[in-house]
Length: 543
Ligand code: AMP
Image (tube, rainbow, N blue to C red):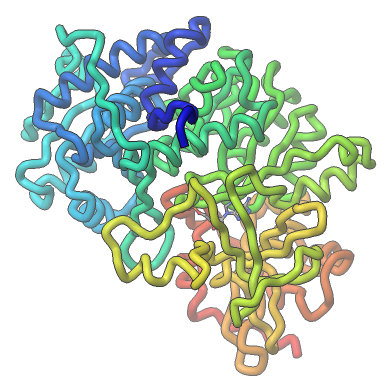
């Protein structure tokens, strides 16, 4: 048809160009591995991304090449995101907490040409050096002055930029070309790659910006605790410059006191991260008796936000938005912002609604199905496996035919591996990962439900519920607790709390104490390792 609108490809670099030209007062503040604080505007970042693109081209990076990063949240990592994708290459973020074996696997699988790393990770690369591909170029994210002496011929990031032009002829790329790559972690078997396109990344930035306005607006100063190596920091390095929010990058310091100080000093208004980091911030807020002065919202996702955590932050006047998503989904799928009428419900009912994983963001369709693949109603009662479809969701895994074949159903929807219900208002409740559900006598028990209740006990600092094999019931729940102090909680007390919400047969058979819970590379409790740890555990005979 003639006279239709122009059709320009959606491109990631356009976001930074836009921010550079229009959001001139916003800034990127970074805690550097060198130890100091660094500030730059989006215009400076855009100019440096151009210099970096020239530098990368100079060491042989071309369109379609994968350039890996092993780095904390910081301005140089941000510049890499835009320079690499802007020049038509693919930014492959590597999680430094992966095992050596997994890291070598993904560097090989992605066929990375260059690896850019923070100073912190030099020992990791030195230890892997003899197994790395011979032609892999290694760039250290620092200046000449801070280059360490090493047997490895590291290139220096700032030297790559030095003297380069501050403009770059960014190529016009098809919007369905790849811009980013992130491998899943915390699973058995090899990590699998989610390959993001320019189109999916720009659209996802729009989706979350219209969905989470309390975090994402021109006056906000947002601190992504969620790392840039974990699903692009949930999209914040794209959404923040899009809306003109400032980014406060915490670098390697993610403990409660450091986060509190940075939030206080930099007037942070919103912060996003997994529940484990909020345990640290919570303890610091309790110790100081106040929240950071400007903090208005925390977004909690990656694993279920315990009700007690939501209650705490809300009680301090900090809005909690519980979100759910996956690496394979760019990642945000649902958000817990309450619709207007629900905001006038009693506080307790609001917290109950916020403890659910929330409603879908635009661009993500949800369905739940039974074991035969038949759709189940969104009535808040029916529980089934959750499938998703949308423009920000993978259509298969990167160069992995086998995993791709298992990923989608006959209708082309992606199977999340989560088990959930959806209520008539559109609120999703994740019951569990399907492999973490506890199957007792043919009935399912949700480990998340039980953890949520136990977390409200004042003597419980952290906990997890796992399945233990049982001769009669197949599996029974075991409660693993990190006590808050010397004075340990009693199982009877926790049972009494649980009985207000669950049936008697769902109560954990036993409780064990540990000093800490094993975490996955993305900071979530690793049920896999916990089950291995307690593989030989025998439950007491409770009948
Ligand atoms: P990842 O790809 O590492 O981000 O992990 C995605 C998985 O984390 C999802 O499939 C869920 O099992 C889990 N997850 C993410 N957010 C939540 C949440 N808010 N509540 C419960 N589980 C979550």
